Length: 126
Image (cartoon, rainbow, N blue to C red):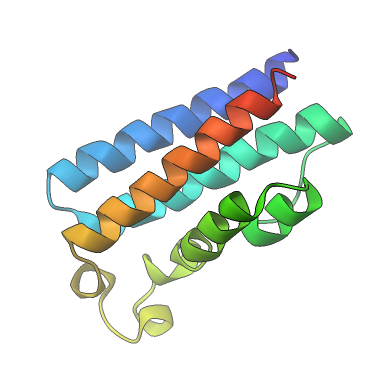
């Protein structure tokens, strides 16, 4: 496996761990952001593995679709994708991000991100 692919997967795993720590600490909006980031980085690792170049976009729905990910992964990306912006900007969430998230939302997003990561890891070992 190319070092670059491994670097993206390691960064994704670090973000998953960060999302889990933030969830435990009750910082739900930041956990949501790191869940999205973990998924994006994992998919970019697969993209590099498959196409031998970096994907220069943040839309993980598009990335998953271009990688011919199964519907379960595309669906996870549909849930995670908005949190790249909504978890950070009050005007995107129409409220303070910290007030827009709760434990249930953060847990669901982290679970979805873990699924994307597992699929991505598997795809880079084929």
